Image (cartoon, rainbow, N blue to C red):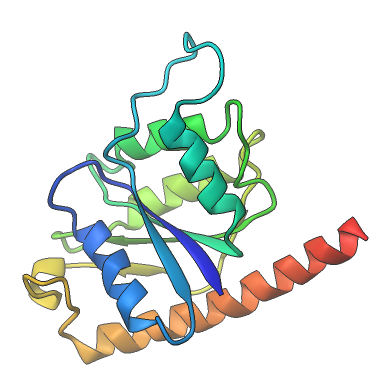
Length: 188
């Protein structure tokens, strides 16, 4: 399956970007995971007129070319990052690549609660009018205490965590295939 994976942080060191890069390597025999870096994306403003910036057009193309989307969201102040919110706003302004697209939210955090609150908030945002993503409601992957479970190279070192990630991905693949088949049949 071809998956566009958005790292929801504009920090130079991001455990969520590292998580997606681990997934791209770990699942390479089953999935083609295209990790999208949002650091070059400008802050959204409704004052912007004209076509979307090139970086947004590129993200739009990459999402449209994918069968599904994974968004890795860190959690700051019980919320998604302003950088990720800005990207989602760009993707619901002139372009709408998430509409009808199967999306799974995941997250990694240094804290005990993982990115659980940001994922709840992100799901609410993704189902709003103008975005209309089809958000996976199965197993939730939020990686708590990431510094204890991931080495400096970005490899997950805990087999239980890897096993649960594999279970989450298997469920999401099944969901995405079903959604894509339904979308295809509706278009005929």
